[in-house]
Length: 218
Image (cartoon, rainbow, N blue to C red; front, side, top):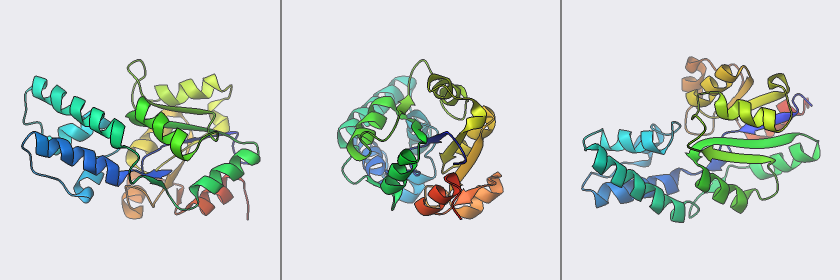
């Protein structure tokens, strides 16, 4: 076993959340008089948290007060509609089961709101993760290392015992800022060429490759 703790991103890494995120974004865009965005447009803005997503899709063309109202409505709508079309990527559930059975500890750290993270983990991966956390007021968002280092310490490991697994340049920077090895997946919200150009060294294409790499299978 290559590592003792595997820390996963959520969106674009273990769950395909794009359809539900896009539906929530377009709900608030229409409500506040903006043009709808395609899923591809929205996907390009994902990775830096909900506030950044909303700022990007409205292009900053509102007062701070109006932005707060739009963001609040987005969070409220998404919180009650975050698990309509969301599904795990192929093979992810069984991969997590196999890692856990092999003795590896598992965690999720996401820039998605903490409430939504725990709703989705409970729905799709109940009992598999030793820790699951999203954006919280007292913890800096990725790519800052704070959330990663705090869970490593909470679970009693050293950074060298751990690997961070994600799908974007944000996750790559998170691993680098944490002093941690990375795995970046190419089936999520960024493609292989983008990830390679961003500097990812370990790029894997499916759940089976992740499992084989982590458990050092040939």
